[in-house]
Structure formats: structure tokens, C-alpha cells
Length: 192
Image (cartoon, rainbow, N blue to C red):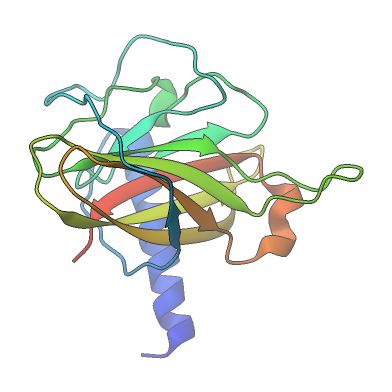
């Protein structure tokens, strides 16, 4: 299988995961990833259970969270600092697993404006559940336009101990498309 064919299959798998998340189904797709992680340790207070929905809440430029292993994608609008998730729900409703992690888009990409350079990576905060052991997680970000159509894809990998939190930069594969992006959708899975 060529690298290009593998890449197309990977992008297709992520898009299927996003579509399933938007329709209320879940998938446990996994992908090989690359990228860099930044930030220090911290803690996560996620709890088990959840229906995939929750009450609205306001964020500080952040978006909703996604539990690893659930295949549920979440998104962040580059021009809206209100929490949002797939299906119109807000953050906090994704089901947690004992050995899982939550991923939340902190900042999406942005095009160049005036003297400010373009930012061609999404910043994602990944928090391992307290009860989990050390594990490696694939962080996949789908970049979409204002209509929700696919623009680009990016991925990263991060290894966390139980209760640890890290911030990961997920670069666009095609940074020249940054001006078209309006939303970042994240999905976290345990690396296989």
C-alpha cells in the first residue's frame, strides 16, 4: 500500500468517525500519528458515564472535550468562544473510560492578519483520567470550513500517565489552506 493510499484511508476513517459522532453513533477507529506535545503536568477531574449531551456552558476560547476510545469527535469554531460539540451539545457529555483521556481544542488555526502571521496548528489539551495507567493517545484534528466541509487533517501523538495533562500542537498537513478553516474537530483514541 502506498503512502498516499494509506493517507487517504486515514482521512476517510477520521471523516467517518466525525460523521458517526454527528449522528450519535460511536466508533473506535485508531490511526498512527505524529506531532509534538508541549506543556506540563496537571490533573483531570473527568468522571465516568455520560449520555453524550450536557448543559450549555461558556468557555474561555476553548471547545468541548472528547473521550479517547469513544471515537466521538468534537469541534472548535475559530470565531466563537462558546463551547460546542458534535450534534449541537456542549462540552462535558462524552463518556469517560477508566483508561481513557479527554481531548479539548484550546485554539484552532487562524489565517494571517496584518502583521500577525498565520497559525497553522491547533492547540489541544489532553487529560488522562486519574484511574488510568501510562498510555499513548492518537490526537486527530479535522479542519473544516464555515459550512462544515472538510478542508484538511492533522494528527499528533502524546503519552500520558494517569491524571496527567498536556497541551499538544497538531499541525495542518496542508498549511496553505489555513484561510479556509473555520472549525477544528478533535478525536482522541488509545494508540494501537
